[in-house]
Image (cartoon, rainbow over the protein chains, first blue to last red):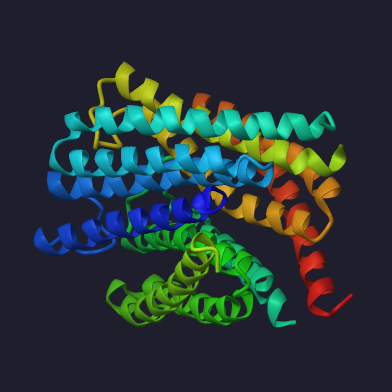
Length: 131
Length: 131
Length: 131
C-alpha cells in the first residue's frame, strides 16, 4: 500500500492547485477584478501569488516524486510527499490571510522537497552507476 | 490504439502551450512591449493571461492523465483528454479575442478535467485498496 | 547508462527551477520588494520573468522528455535534454544581467526542445500505428 502513496500525493497536489485557482476566482469576483487584470486589491494579489507559488512548487515537486518512485523509492517519497502537501496547504491558508504568515508552511514544504530531491538523486545516481 | 491516446494528448497539450507562448511573443512585438514587462496593452495582457492559464491548466491536467493511464484507464482518460484539449483551444482562441468569451471553452475543459480526475482517483483508490 | 540520462536531466531541470526561484527571493530581499508584489525594480522584474519563463519551458520540455523516454528514445532525448538544460542555464544567467542578452540561450534551448518534440512525436506515432 505504501507503494501507492505517490499516486495519492499527486491527487492531493492537483486538488491543492484547484483550490488555489478557486480562491483566485472567488477573490476576482469579490473585489470586481476583471480578467485579464491580476492586481487591484491586496487580498486578490495574495490569492494570485499563492496560486502561482503553488504552481511553481508543484512543478519542482512532482517530477522529483515521479523520479524517486520510478527508482523504487515510492514509499519514502510518498511519506515525504504527504508532509510536502501538508506544508503547502498550511502555506496557502496562512498566506491568504497575511503575507508574513507564510514562512512556517514554506519551510516545512521546502524540507520535504529536499527529502524527495535526495531520494530522486540517490535513485538516479544508483541507476547511472548501474547499481 | 486507444491506449496510445494519452501520449497523443500530451503532444497536443505541449503544442497548445507552445502556441500560447507564440501568441505572447507576437503581441510583445506588435505592441512594442519589451521584456520583462508583462503589461502595457489589453491585447498583450489577454495573450499573456491565456498563456499562464494554459500553463496552470496543463499542470493540473497532465499529472491526472498520467495517473489514470498508469492505472490502466488510458483509453478513457485519452478520450476525455481530447475533449480537454479541444476545450482549451476554444478557450484560448476566444479569450485572445475578448475576455468575456472565454467561458464556454473553460467550462468544457473543466468538465473534461473532472472526468480525468475521477478516473485518476478511481485508479488510485483501487490500487490503494489492493484491488 | 545513456538510458538513465533523462532522469539526470529531470534532476538538473528541477535544480534550475530552484535556482531561478532563489534568484527571485534574493532580488526580493535586496530591493525590499515585499510579497505579494512582483514589480518595483528592473533587476527584480527580470529575475521574476526568468523564473516564470523557466517554469513555462519546463512545463513543455518535461512531458516531451517523458514521452520520448517512454517510447524507448531516452538516450537521444537525454542528450538533447542536456543541450536544453545548458541553453536554459545560459538563458537565465544572461537574462538576469540584461533582457536583450537572452536570445542565444533561448534559441539553443528552443532547438533542443524541437528535437525532443520530434522524438516524442515519432515515438507516439510509431506506437499509434502499432509499429
